Length: 167
Image (cartoon, rainbow, N blue to C red):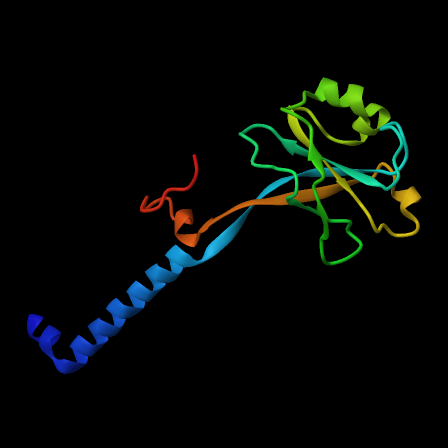
């Protein structure tokens, strides 16, 4: 049985398996996958938010963990009409987290359109080049996400615990 391990063909095969395993490990360590924060975006094109010159997306993200959102990150909004996501830079964030009651107070009737039942982080993004018929979209709620990080594919293998992901 062990004699077969020393045959030339067997040694070549074992070397190929070892090299292939090493290459897969290196790829799993170096290939990065995106990590998104998901939420919902409310399109507001008319007051009560003061004088609005361009339509604004008000994005609500769960505040159940520390926020990794910053101004300048790209907000991806799925309008559902196209296959690709609308990309808009986040122009600002509300300081801290906001309770559902505060959301209703700040955004008035628009707040009732969103399903918010826990504290949220709120971001704003101006839609500089909307479609001409944006008024009929006023008050619409869309799925939204923000790319907040990337991590190695190997971090998905929590069983091995070689490269644990974030807590």
